[in-house]
Length: 185
Length: 305
Image (cartoon, rainbow over all chains, first blue to last red; front, side, top):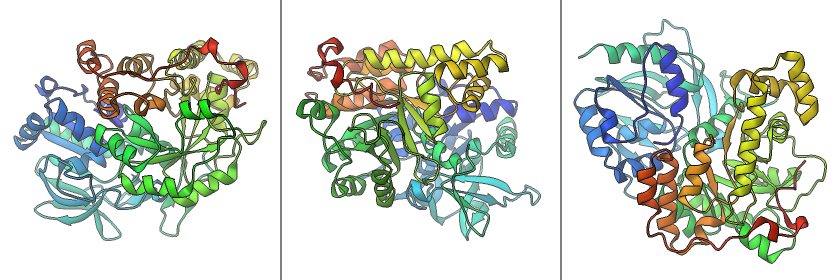
């Protein structure tokens, strides 16, 4: 809809996947996985609601469609959004509470090395841009933290990240997601 | 190019690197950035789906009408707009006025537009943008100008167009000029690239990067004269990454409706049936100006070097 979708397309295709941009409900048909990219969560949800994509997308993800959500995508998926626009509606599928721009404005955007579970101790370059802060987690697996706060979580077939692997030049998370998407539950 | 950016901390993290500066622009792609002059405008823009707003005292159409020296906006106004919305807020400083830029950085603005819409403060030099932690967007008319701004540290580029006219013709000219400039590089070898750099006044390293990528190495938006959903879609089909709309929204009859329509047109730029639907019943667009009717010394795009 809006955001850094081209960068995800590049990373996924480098990881061996075929991709398609999803802008309407019929684009959802036949997908193995979907990426909710970074961008502005208010813009994305407003557009999805206007074109009737929000509800079919919620059904698809609830039905087990593998999902990679980064930054704004994590906000769109979250159950609770604090500091959002009045009545910001999201998908409400991921059992976390996030605070939009919880790490501050652009001037506080940063890069930091992350230790992610299952990555054999080799750090991952975390790129955080006006990133959401995960304030509470429910029934999810936290797979990476920064200063004690969760920055990467797994819930079933959802992988949600507060940072931007598509800008990092490191394809390990995209390869992991392609593996997840190509193996049914 | 990027090593003068960012402050490294003890824990291996780094703030304000070129990657996070250019990265925010990547998050704005496919979106619409709207000029707003009040907190209320900013809320309307956000509600309409803007991916960012530009905080200003006067939209370009009024700057053009009223004349006089146009400067950075009052920090109080900028703060009130920052407080009103959760999307990124941009603000303009004069070309070469690095102190206005320092002030905007101190306010915590998300992006600085070093803009020809304001009266230039330096007739030779633009701001050295690398030392700032806040990213900059700059205007261009062709590839040479775009690459010079990138060499100075711009993390995002936009066409200049002719702001405040509601006439898209100059934005089209500038977007096509950048595209043609990049296409011309494709068949060149290194020696030819060096020669081309000399011809168009481009820094060689940035031009080599454009050759390698087949596009500008940073995000490129359209700006200057976009007034309708069709204008926005036209610029998207010409290959830009998103659009700025200045006077076009709040100088029109029904700003919220027009703003929503331009947002939809920017996402569905390649779907004429959607464009037909969102273009209908928008009320009057801004009146607009023919470019030849503007005295030569009042053309804003000629500012910047």
